[in-house]
Structure formats: structure tokens, C-alpha cells
Length: 577
Image 1 (cartoon, helix red, strand yellow):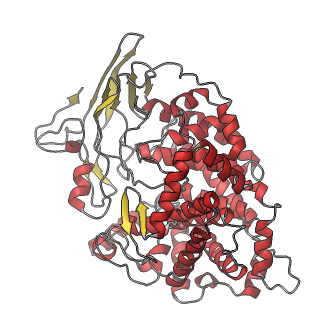
Image 2 (cartoon, one colour):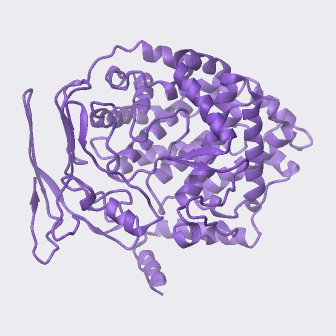
Image 3 (cartoon, helix red, strand yellow):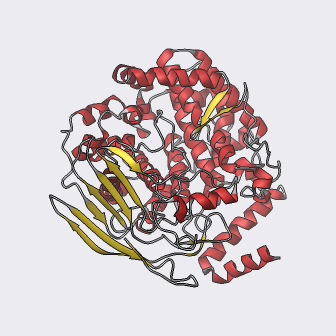
């Protein structure tokens, strides 16, 4: 009954447009459950001929001819530079990054031995993964229609994030890279085996792996990369390729019909838009490809003002999700240059602001603070790097928008750049002068990040103070970190934000790690500056913070701020730092 009351309360606050969108999504889900939607099953070859412009007069989709089109050159130029000639990309990567290439092959060997890295965890999955098993709790979500799966309930699904990470299939990309680096067909064969088993175990619309449109988008992006990396491999056969294309079509249809416009209007909606952009660009012969590209580009354009503060910082007050956002728009810029060129004029100026923030929060040792939530996930797994190292993103940004200061801070972090931009991107990066950023300290006043830095080298002193908006009461990824401090002395990190630990596995652990006691700030009567709400992703009360002084000079920086998060207590107080 309380859940019903909560739903009624939310509906009373909803706009007409939100009600329209939610009702349409609920109606589609009901048709799927009743078996009355064509999206509830893979299309037949004849049906697919109507959905994919395969050039067959009898309208029967032929897998071998479709695969031949992928192996040809007529569509490759529309995708990413590093995929235009992946063999050449791999050759240059091995020459430029020999240690990283060896590590990539070692990672592929671990995968072949049944060990897969999921975020910051290594999980044993055996010769074939159990696609619906959450490995830590041993729980398996029920095989029912996706709309009926309570995926956020740990008693039902365990930690759904772990299940989803496996089903993003990002390790397929690692296997594809290793195949190109070594010529070993085992890696390509393993991809085909695992992907085939996934298609068998996850029929359309059934189970936890269809519950999140963002997860479908990430999985589709992994498939695009994998198919392009392996497109010349004899292990990839026409019949199998046709089956994957049919599932990709259903992925795109599911995403476009179940966008997180009101469910999670954050990196979920932008990631879903990017997924549509990827599918529509990589496979332009889908009859809906132009629509998917246009819809994805339009959403990404609309979200620029909604999700970014005026100073260019991502609105949910989480550094990791800011890096996600930068990655999304870097990939979008590349994907739309030939098909949706109008987006470049909107994205490129905002990328400069997005990169500025990443630049200044980078510590002297090259790592970045994990303020707010982080899930350890990646847009696409193009190389191994620690969760708190954002320099690959800075390097890609430097090459794409010509930022010498980003190149200075990123240094030799070119693993992802090599695969994304290819040899030409490496040459563009190498041609940039390594110029330190202008200025050392900076206030991102609208979002509330105050960065103090002695100089731009690895032995500098550095500090960051959080004093700004908490996002909102539904700010899913913000923490109770008002006036929290991060500190590095002589290049050594001394005070840190401990990060997230978990989202849904343990409510007690979740609340501790997002509470004030886990941060370098003050609690009062053992209470946090923000009060958690009923969900693990919302807040009952949030503080108002403001900076009362900010002075930066060549010889010192000075900050002073305050927040009112303790005014709600029996003995109300202000906290000033």
C-alpha cells in the first residue's frame, strides 16, 4: 500500500508530457507481455528484409551478403577512425604501446580461462557465463517479462550492477583486440560462442538483461565494436551475423521506445541516445537507421543545457559520471561528423568546458578524485586503466579539439585514443605542443568545486573543496559531502573521498559511503549534512552551500564557505570551513 501511495503522489506531480510518455511505455510493455507486439520476438528472414535494406528482390535477408557488406568499405567510413582499418590500428597500437598490447593479450587469456573483470572485480564465469546469475550473492533474477523484474531489490536480483556489467559484453572488445594483435582465432571463436549462448539464454524482452535501456545501449555499442573488429575473421559466419543483426534491431527498438526521459534523465538518457547513434551509424542499411541517428543526436543536443552547469560540470555532482559524459560526447562528435554535422557546432564548445573540469581535478599524480557515486563502468573497454584515472579521456579530447593543455596532463595515456582515432589520431595528438594549462587554481563556482594547485608537475601541492549545490533531492549520484576536502602534498595523495562501494547490495554500506562520516568534513550529533530518502538513489533533505570567500594569487589560495545542512537538527547550527 505505501508503494501505491507513493506512485499516486508522483503521478500527481507529473506533467502532461511525462504522463503521456509513461502511459505509452506502459502500454507497449503490456502488449509485449500479451504477445501482441512484433518486438517480442526476433523477426523472420522475410520480415527482416522489410526492416533492413539488404538489396534482395525477394525480400529475404541473406546473412552472407550482409556480412560481405560489413566487410566491404562502403559503410566503414561513417563509423570511427580506428575501425576503418582495424588491422592497421592494431599494428600501430602494438608499436606504440607494447606493454599495453601485452597486457591486453594477457587479459584475453584470462577471459579464455574463465576470468572476467567487472569494474574493479575479477569474477570467475567458467567456460560459458551464466548470464542471469549475480556472482556475489548467488541470486538469479526471474525469467519473466522485463517490466515485471524488481531489479533494484537485492532479495530478488542481488547487486544488479554486477549482473549488468557482465551483460554489457565489454570483454568481447578485448577479445577482438587480442585477435587482431595476435591473429589467434581462439579469441574470435570465443566471442561467437559467448554471444551465441547469450542470444539463447536471453530471448527478447525476457529477464533482467532487458530491464535497463542504458544496459541495452552499452551492450549494443560493445557488439558494434566487436563486429567491426572481427569482421574479417572466418569465425564470423553469415547465419550467426544475421541473428546478431536481428537482435541489434530489437535492442534499438527497445531503447527508442523505453528512453529514460523521466525514469533516469541523467547519463541514462544520454547513454541511450549514444547507443541509438552507434547502431544507426554502424548499420545505415537499417531502414530506421536515419531515425535512430537523428533521435540520438537530438537527445544529446537537448541534454547539454539540462545536464551541465554553466561552468561545464555535470549536474549530478559525481566526478565519475562527469567523465562518462565527456566520453559520450567525444564519441558522439566522431559519429555525427558525416551524418549529423549540425551537432558538432553545439557539442564542440561545450566539450572545452567539460575538459576544463577534468583537467583541473586531475591530481599531481595523474589520478582524479571519485567524488559522488562511481560504478567502475566504462562506455567501451578499449584499454586497462584504474577507475580513478581519466587521462585517456583527456588525451582523446586533446586530439579531437586541439587542446595542448589536455595533452600536457594526459601525457602518454594513449591506449584508448589509439583504438578510437587510429594512426591518424595518434599523429594529431603527437603534433600538439605540451603546454601547461593557463593558471593553476580555479573555482567552478556554479557547480561548487574549488581547486587549489601549486603548479603543474607531479610534486605539487593540490586541494579540492566541495561547496555548491547538492544537485537535487532526487540527485541520484550526489553524496553528503558539503565542505569536504581532498588534499595532495608534494604530489602524494593524503585525504581522499572513499568513493561508493555499492549501490544496492547492502543498504547500510550504501548509506555509510554516501554519508558525511565517510568524507573529510563535519558531522553533528552523528548526522550527515544531507538526509537519505527512502531509495538508495534519493535524498529527504539537502544542504544549501555557499562560498563566502575565494582568493587566488601566484603565492597563495584562500577559500571560505558554509552550509546549512545542520539547521534541521534539534540544536541547529551552520558549518563553516
